[in-house]
Image 1 (cartoon, rainbow, N blue to C red):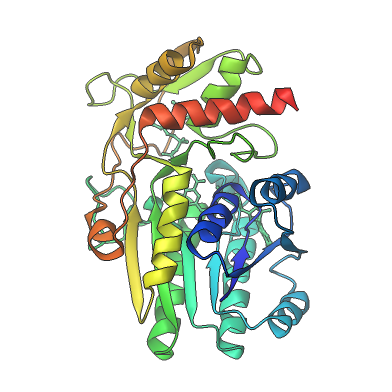
Image 2 (cartoon, rainbow, N blue to C red; image 1 turned 180 degrees about the vertical axis):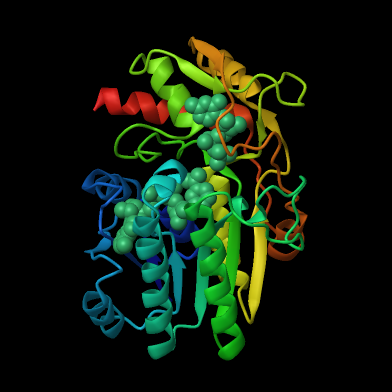
Length: 334
Ligand code: NAD
Ligand code: UDP
Protein backbone atom coordinates (compact mmCIF):
# COMPACT_ATOMS: atom_id res chain seq x y z
CA UNK A 1 0.00 0.00 0.00
CA UNK A 2 1.28 3.50 -0.93
CA UNK A 3 0.06 6.38 1.23
CA UNK A 4 0.65 10.06 0.55
CA UNK A 5 0.79 12.19 3.72
CA UNK A 6 0.27 15.80 2.64
CA UNK A 7 1.52 18.22 5.28
CA UNK A 8 3.04 15.15 6.92
CA UNK A 9 5.97 17.01 8.42
CA UNK A 10 3.70 19.09 10.68
CA UNK A 11 2.46 18.48 14.21
CA UNK A 12 -0.36 15.98 13.58
CA UNK A 13 1.06 14.60 10.32
CA UNK A 14 4.39 13.56 11.85
CA UNK A 15 2.66 11.69 14.69
CA UNK A 16 0.36 10.05 12.16
CA UNK A 17 3.42 8.84 10.25
CA UNK A 18 4.41 6.89 13.38
CA UNK A 19 0.91 5.42 13.83
CA UNK A 20 0.68 4.44 10.18
CA UNK A 21 4.06 2.75 10.34
CA UNK A 22 2.89 0.77 13.40
CA UNK A 23 -0.41 -0.26 11.84
CA UNK A 24 0.86 -0.85 8.29
CA UNK A 25 4.48 -2.05 8.62
CA UNK A 26 4.71 -2.89 4.90
CA UNK A 27 3.22 0.34 3.55
CA UNK A 28 5.22 2.85 1.56
CA UNK A 29 4.67 6.21 3.27
CA UNK A 30 5.45 9.39 1.32
CA UNK A 31 5.49 12.85 2.92
CA UNK A 32 4.93 16.00 0.89
CA UNK A 33 5.32 19.34 2.66
CA UNK A 34 6.56 22.80 1.69
CA UNK A 35 8.01 23.39 5.22
CA UNK A 36 6.05 26.61 5.63
CA UNK A 37 5.26 25.59 9.22
CA UNK A 38 7.77 22.81 9.94
CA UNK A 39 11.45 22.04 9.56
CA UNK A 40 13.90 19.31 8.54
CA UNK A 41 14.42 18.58 12.22
CA UNK A 42 11.10 16.70 12.33
CA UNK A 43 12.20 14.54 9.41
CA UNK A 44 15.43 13.71 11.23
CA UNK A 45 13.44 12.75 14.31
CA UNK A 46 11.14 10.53 12.25
CA UNK A 47 14.21 8.86 10.77
CA UNK A 48 15.60 8.28 14.25
CA UNK A 49 12.29 6.96 15.62
CA UNK A 50 11.55 4.54 12.79
CA UNK A 51 15.09 3.65 11.70
CA UNK A 52 14.01 4.14 8.11
CA UNK A 53 14.76 6.54 5.33
CA UNK A 54 11.83 8.97 5.09
CA UNK A 55 10.44 9.47 1.59
CA UNK A 56 10.06 13.25 1.60
CA UNK A 57 9.27 15.73 -1.16
CA UNK A 58 9.50 19.46 -0.53
CA UNK A 59 6.60 20.54 -2.71
CA UNK A 60 3.98 23.26 -2.37
CA UNK A 61 0.58 21.71 -3.04
CA UNK A 62 -0.34 24.91 -4.86
CA UNK A 63 2.32 23.96 -7.45
CA UNK A 64 0.24 21.77 -9.73
CA UNK A 65 3.08 20.63 -11.95
CA UNK A 66 5.19 19.36 -9.09
CA UNK A 67 2.17 17.59 -7.61
CA UNK A 68 1.27 15.99 -10.94
CA UNK A 69 4.83 14.63 -11.22
CA UNK A 70 4.55 13.13 -7.73
CA UNK A 71 1.27 11.37 -8.57
CA UNK A 72 2.82 10.11 -11.82
CA UNK A 73 5.76 8.68 -9.89
CA UNK A 74 3.76 6.70 -7.33
CA UNK A 75 0.52 4.77 -7.61
CA UNK A 76 -0.94 5.96 -4.31
CA UNK A 77 -3.73 3.98 -2.67
CA UNK A 78 -4.70 6.74 -0.28
CA UNK A 79 -4.06 10.35 0.69
CA UNK A 80 -4.18 11.88 4.16
CA UNK A 81 -4.41 15.65 3.82
CA UNK A 82 -3.06 17.72 6.72
CA UNK A 83 -1.57 20.61 4.76
CA UNK A 84 -2.92 24.09 5.35
CA UNK A 85 -2.67 27.20 7.45
CA UNK A 86 -4.32 27.01 10.87
CA UNK A 87 -3.92 30.26 12.82
CA UNK A 88 -7.42 31.60 13.45
CA UNK A 89 -6.33 35.19 14.24
CA UNK A 90 -4.14 35.45 11.16
CA UNK A 91 -6.99 34.18 8.99
CA UNK A 92 -9.11 37.14 10.12
CA UNK A 93 -6.36 39.62 9.22
CA UNK A 94 -5.36 37.90 5.98
CA UNK A 95 -8.32 35.84 4.72
CA UNK A 96 -7.09 35.52 1.13
CA UNK A 97 -3.92 33.81 2.29
CA UNK A 98 -6.11 31.18 3.98
CA UNK A 99 -8.63 30.73 1.18
CA UNK A 100 -5.85 30.47 -1.39
CA UNK A 101 -3.69 27.91 0.39
CA UNK A 102 -6.30 25.78 2.13
CA UNK A 103 -8.67 25.55 -0.83
CA UNK A 104 -6.08 25.20 -3.61
CA UNK A 105 -4.11 22.53 -1.79
CA UNK A 106 -7.31 20.49 -1.37
CA UNK A 107 -8.55 21.09 -4.92
CA UNK A 108 -5.23 20.03 -6.42
CA UNK A 109 -4.97 16.90 -4.32
CA UNK A 110 -8.52 15.86 -5.20
CA UNK A 111 -7.95 16.57 -8.88
CA UNK A 112 -4.92 14.28 -9.04
CA UNK A 113 -6.60 11.62 -6.94
CA UNK A 114 -9.35 11.41 -9.55
CA UNK A 115 -6.88 11.52 -12.43
CA UNK A 116 -4.69 8.75 -11.00
CA UNK A 117 -7.45 6.55 -9.47
CA UNK A 118 -6.54 7.21 -5.85
CA UNK A 119 -9.75 6.33 -4.08
CA UNK A 120 -9.19 6.90 -0.37
CA UNK A 121 -8.98 10.41 1.04
CA UNK A 122 -8.74 11.37 4.70
CA UNK A 123 -9.18 15.06 5.53
CA UNK A 124 -8.19 17.10 8.60
CA UNK A 125 -11.31 18.98 9.56
CA UNK A 126 -12.10 20.69 12.81
CA UNK A 127 -14.75 21.13 15.48
CA UNK A 128 -14.84 24.74 14.29
CA UNK A 129 -17.34 23.65 11.57
CA UNK A 130 -19.98 23.34 14.32
CA UNK A 131 -19.81 27.10 14.89
CA UNK A 132 -21.52 27.98 18.15
CA UNK A 133 -23.41 24.66 18.35
CA UNK A 134 -24.20 23.23 21.77
CA UNK A 135 -21.90 20.55 23.24
CA UNK A 136 -21.65 17.60 23.28
CA UNK A 137 -21.32 17.98 19.52
CA UNK A 138 -22.36 15.14 17.24
CA UNK A 139 -21.58 14.51 13.59
CA UNK A 140 -25.29 14.81 12.78
CA UNK A 141 -25.41 18.36 14.21
CA UNK A 142 -25.87 21.18 11.73
CA UNK A 143 -22.81 23.03 10.49
CA UNK A 144 -23.12 26.62 11.59
CA UNK A 145 -21.28 29.60 10.09
CA UNK A 146 -17.68 29.62 11.26
CA UNK A 147 -16.66 32.80 13.04
CA UNK A 148 -13.43 33.15 11.05
CA UNK A 149 -12.03 32.45 7.56
CA UNK A 150 -9.92 29.52 8.79
CA UNK A 151 -13.05 27.71 9.96
CA UNK A 152 -14.78 28.66 6.75
CA UNK A 153 -12.03 26.95 4.69
CA UNK A 154 -12.61 23.73 6.65
CA UNK A 155 -16.35 23.79 5.95
CA UNK A 156 -15.70 24.58 2.26
CA UNK A 157 -13.17 21.75 1.89
CA UNK A 158 -15.63 19.34 3.51
CA UNK A 159 -18.24 20.37 0.93
CA UNK A 160 -15.78 20.00 -1.97
CA UNK A 161 -14.99 16.47 -0.81
CA UNK A 162 -18.65 15.52 -0.25
CA UNK A 163 -19.62 16.75 -3.73
CA UNK A 164 -16.66 14.96 -5.31
CA UNK A 165 -17.52 11.67 -3.60
CA UNK A 166 -21.15 12.04 -4.69
CA UNK A 167 -20.12 12.49 -8.31
CA UNK A 168 -17.47 9.72 -8.19
CA UNK A 169 -18.82 6.71 -6.30
CA UNK A 170 -15.42 4.98 -6.25
CA UNK A 171 -13.90 7.95 -4.35
CA UNK A 172 -14.27 7.52 -0.58
CA UNK A 173 -13.68 10.19 1.99
CA UNK A 174 -13.23 10.40 5.76
CA UNK A 175 -13.79 13.84 7.27
CA UNK A 176 -12.14 13.86 10.68
CA UNK A 177 -13.25 16.70 12.93
CA UNK A 178 -10.56 17.26 15.52
CA UNK A 179 -11.23 18.81 18.89
CA UNK A 180 -8.13 20.18 20.73
CA UNK A 181 -5.00 18.17 19.86
CA UNK A 182 -2.20 18.54 22.43
CA UNK A 183 0.78 16.62 23.81
CA UNK A 184 3.59 14.97 21.91
CA UNK A 185 5.05 11.55 21.15
CA UNK A 186 6.26 9.96 24.38
CA UNK A 187 9.87 9.94 23.08
CA UNK A 188 9.89 13.74 23.23
CA UNK A 189 11.39 13.74 19.72
CA UNK A 190 8.41 15.16 17.87
CA UNK A 191 5.74 17.57 19.08
CA UNK A 192 4.14 20.89 18.33
CA UNK A 193 7.14 22.74 16.93
CA UNK A 194 5.37 25.66 15.32
CA UNK A 195 7.41 28.53 13.95
CA UNK A 196 6.92 31.72 15.98
CA UNK A 197 4.65 32.60 18.90
CA UNK A 198 2.26 29.86 20.08
CA UNK A 199 -1.46 30.57 19.63
CA UNK A 200 -2.87 27.60 21.45
CA UNK A 201 -3.13 26.98 25.16
CA UNK A 202 -0.87 23.94 25.75
CA UNK A 203 2.22 25.21 23.89
CA UNK A 204 1.72 28.58 25.59
CA UNK A 205 1.62 26.92 29.03
CA UNK A 206 4.81 25.01 28.21
CA UNK A 207 6.66 28.17 27.14
CA UNK A 208 5.61 29.95 30.34
CA UNK A 209 6.73 26.97 32.45
CA UNK A 210 10.08 27.06 30.69
CA UNK A 211 10.44 30.79 31.36
CA UNK A 212 10.45 31.74 27.68
CA UNK A 213 7.22 33.68 28.16
CA UNK A 214 6.55 35.58 31.39
CA UNK A 215 2.91 34.83 32.11
CA UNK A 216 -0.12 32.97 30.76
CA UNK A 217 -3.11 35.15 29.99
CA UNK A 218 -6.27 33.20 30.71
CA UNK A 219 -8.94 34.56 28.42
CA UNK A 220 -12.02 35.03 30.58
CA UNK A 221 -12.79 34.03 34.15
CA UNK A 222 -16.53 34.68 34.02
CA UNK A 223 -17.83 31.92 31.74
CA UNK A 224 -20.78 29.87 33.02
CA UNK A 225 -18.47 26.98 33.99
CA UNK A 226 -17.46 25.62 37.39
CA UNK A 227 -14.31 27.75 37.72
CA UNK A 228 -15.30 30.47 35.23
CA UNK A 229 -12.74 29.50 32.56
CA UNK A 230 -13.46 28.01 29.14
CA UNK A 231 -13.93 24.28 28.67
CA UNK A 232 -12.44 22.32 25.76
CA UNK A 233 -12.00 18.70 24.73
CA UNK A 234 -8.24 18.02 24.74
CA UNK A 235 -7.06 14.97 22.84
CA UNK A 236 -3.55 13.51 22.92
CA UNK A 237 -1.98 13.83 19.47
CA UNK A 238 -1.02 10.12 19.44
CA UNK A 239 -4.66 9.17 20.03
CA UNK A 240 -5.59 11.49 17.18
CA UNK A 241 -2.89 9.95 14.97
CA UNK A 242 -4.24 6.47 15.67
CA UNK A 243 -7.69 7.72 14.63
CA UNK A 244 -6.29 8.43 11.15
CA UNK A 245 -4.81 4.97 10.80
CA UNK A 246 -8.16 3.45 11.89
CA UNK A 247 -10.13 5.66 9.47
CA UNK A 248 -7.86 4.80 6.54
CA UNK A 249 -8.14 1.10 7.28
CA UNK A 250 -11.94 1.11 7.49
CA UNK A 251 -12.61 3.52 4.61
CA UNK A 252 -14.59 1.70 1.94
CA UNK A 253 -17.18 3.85 0.22
CA UNK A 254 -18.89 7.22 0.32
CA UNK A 255 -18.29 9.88 2.93
CA UNK A 256 -17.75 9.11 6.63
CA UNK A 257 -17.60 11.86 9.21
CA UNK A 258 -16.07 11.36 12.65
CA UNK A 259 -15.48 13.53 15.68
CA UNK A 260 -12.05 12.79 17.11
CA UNK A 261 -12.10 13.96 20.70
CA UNK A 262 -12.07 12.50 24.19
CA UNK A 263 -15.76 13.32 24.87
CA UNK A 264 -14.60 15.04 28.08
CA UNK A 265 -14.39 18.73 28.95
CA UNK A 266 -11.44 20.29 30.80
CA UNK A 267 -11.27 23.93 31.86
CA UNK A 268 -8.27 26.19 31.27
CA UNK A 269 -7.56 26.32 35.00
CA UNK A 270 -7.82 22.55 35.34
CA UNK A 271 -5.29 22.13 32.54
CA UNK A 272 -2.89 24.65 34.09
CA UNK A 273 -3.15 22.96 37.50
CA UNK A 274 -2.64 19.50 35.99
CA UNK A 275 0.44 20.72 34.12
CA UNK A 276 1.93 22.21 37.29
CA UNK A 277 1.20 19.14 39.37
CA UNK A 278 2.44 16.39 37.06
CA UNK A 279 5.54 18.25 35.96
CA UNK A 280 6.45 19.93 39.26
CA UNK A 281 6.65 23.40 37.66
CA UNK A 282 4.99 26.78 38.14
CA UNK A 283 2.85 28.41 35.47
CA UNK A 284 2.20 32.02 36.49
CA UNK A 285 -1.10 33.22 35.08
CA UNK A 286 -3.52 36.12 35.15
CA UNK A 287 -7.17 36.23 34.19
CA UNK A 288 -7.78 38.77 31.43
CA UNK A 289 -10.67 39.73 29.15
CA UNK A 290 -12.40 37.02 27.11
CA UNK A 291 -10.84 36.41 23.67
CA UNK A 292 -13.28 37.53 20.96
CA UNK A 293 -14.96 34.60 19.21
CA UNK A 294 -14.31 32.05 22.00
CA UNK A 295 -17.18 29.88 23.22
CA UNK A 296 -17.64 28.84 26.85
CA UNK A 297 -17.86 25.08 26.35
CA UNK A 298 -16.85 22.81 23.45
CA UNK A 299 -16.56 19.04 23.66
CA UNK A 300 -17.28 16.07 21.46
CA UNK A 301 -19.56 13.15 21.44
CA UNK A 302 -17.04 10.76 19.88
CA UNK A 303 -19.13 7.60 20.22
CA UNK A 304 -19.55 7.20 16.44
CA UNK A 305 -15.80 6.75 15.94
CA UNK A 306 -15.74 4.25 18.80
CA UNK A 307 -18.58 2.24 17.30
CA UNK A 308 -17.53 2.33 13.66
CA UNK A 309 -13.73 2.63 13.80
CA UNK A 310 -13.16 0.75 17.02
CA UNK A 311 -11.17 3.80 18.10
CA UNK A 312 -11.24 5.67 21.38
CA UNK A 313 -8.99 8.34 22.89
CA UNK A 314 -7.17 6.53 25.72
CA UNK A 315 -4.51 8.90 26.96
CA UNK A 316 -5.19 11.08 30.00
CA UNK A 317 -4.78 14.81 30.64
CA UNK A 318 -1.82 13.86 32.84
CA UNK A 319 -0.09 12.11 29.92
CA UNK A 320 -0.86 15.07 27.63
CA UNK A 321 0.84 17.46 30.10
CA UNK A 322 3.82 15.16 30.70
CA UNK A 323 4.44 14.56 27.01
CA UNK A 324 4.04 18.23 26.05
CA UNK A 325 6.58 19.16 28.73
CA UNK A 326 9.03 16.41 27.74
CA UNK A 327 9.00 17.71 24.16
CA UNK A 328 9.40 21.32 25.27
CA UNK A 329 12.39 20.44 27.47
CA UNK A 330 13.93 18.21 24.82
CA UNK A 331 14.55 21.27 22.66
CA UNK A 332 16.88 22.57 25.39
CA UNK A 333 18.74 19.31 25.77
CA UNK A 334 19.79 18.81 22.14
P1 NAD B 1 0.94 22.11 11.11
O1 NAD B 1 1.04 23.52 10.64
O2 NAD B 1 1.86 21.66 12.16
O3 NAD B 1 1.08 21.11 9.86
C1 NAD B 1 0.65 21.45 8.57
C2 NAD B 1 1.80 21.16 7.61
O4 NAD B 1 1.37 21.50 6.29
C3 NAD B 1 3.04 21.98 7.91
O5 NAD B 1 4.17 21.13 8.02
C4 NAD B 1 3.15 22.94 6.72
O6 NAD B 1 4.50 23.20 6.40
C5 NAD B 1 2.42 22.17 5.63
N1 NAD B 1 1.80 23.00 4.58
C6 NAD B 1 0.98 24.07 4.71
N2 NAD B 1 0.62 24.53 3.49
C7 NAD B 1 1.21 23.71 2.58
C8 NAD B 1 1.21 23.66 1.17
N3 NAD B 1 0.55 24.56 0.42
N4 NAD B 1 1.93 22.71 0.55
C9 NAD B 1 2.60 21.78 1.27
N5 NAD B 1 2.65 21.78 2.61
C10 NAD B 1 1.93 22.73 3.26
O7 NAD B 1 -0.57 21.88 11.55
P2 NAD B 1 -1.20 20.69 12.38
O8 NAD B 1 -1.48 21.16 13.75
O9 NAD B 1 -0.42 19.46 12.17
O10 NAD B 1 -2.61 20.57 11.65
C11 NAD B 1 -2.79 19.70 10.55
C12 NAD B 1 -4.17 19.93 9.96
O11 NAD B 1 -5.14 19.74 10.97
C13 NAD B 1 -4.38 21.36 9.44
O12 NAD B 1 -5.14 21.27 8.26
C14 NAD B 1 -5.18 22.01 10.54
O13 NAD B 1 -6.00 23.04 10.04
C15 NAD B 1 -6.01 20.84 11.06
N6 NAD B 1 -6.43 21.03 12.44
C16 NAD B 1 -5.48 21.29 13.40
C17 NAD B 1 -5.87 21.51 14.72
C18 NAD B 1 -4.84 21.84 15.77
O14 NAD B 1 -5.21 22.33 16.84
N7 NAD B 1 -3.55 21.58 15.56
C19 NAD B 1 -7.24 21.44 15.07
C20 NAD B 1 -8.17 21.15 14.08
C21 NAD B 1 -7.77 20.94 12.76
N1 UDP C 1 -6.66 30.13 26.10
C1 UDP C 1 -6.21 30.95 27.11
N2 UDP C 1 -4.98 31.56 26.96
C2 UDP C 1 -4.19 31.35 25.88
C3 UDP C 1 -4.66 30.48 24.85
C4 UDP C 1 -5.91 29.90 25.00
O1 UDP C 1 -6.89 31.17 28.10
O2 UDP C 1 -3.09 31.94 25.79
C5 UDP C 1 -7.97 29.45 26.26
C6 UDP C 1 -8.98 29.77 25.19
O3 UDP C 1 -9.74 30.90 25.54
C7 UDP C 1 -9.83 28.48 25.15
C8 UDP C 1 -8.81 27.38 25.49
O4 UDP C 1 -7.72 28.05 26.13
O5 UDP C 1 -10.79 28.49 26.20
C9 UDP C 1 -8.28 26.64 24.27
O6 UDP C 1 -7.82 27.59 23.33
P1 UDP C 1 -6.93 27.18 22.08
O7 UDP C 1 -6.54 28.45 21.37
O8 UDP C 1 -5.84 26.26 22.51
O9 UDP C 1 -7.91 26.31 21.18
P2 UDP C 1 -9.37 26.66 20.58
O10 UDP C 1 -10.34 25.90 21.40
O11 UDP C 1 -9.56 28.13 20.60
O12 UDP C 1 -9.27 26.11 19.19
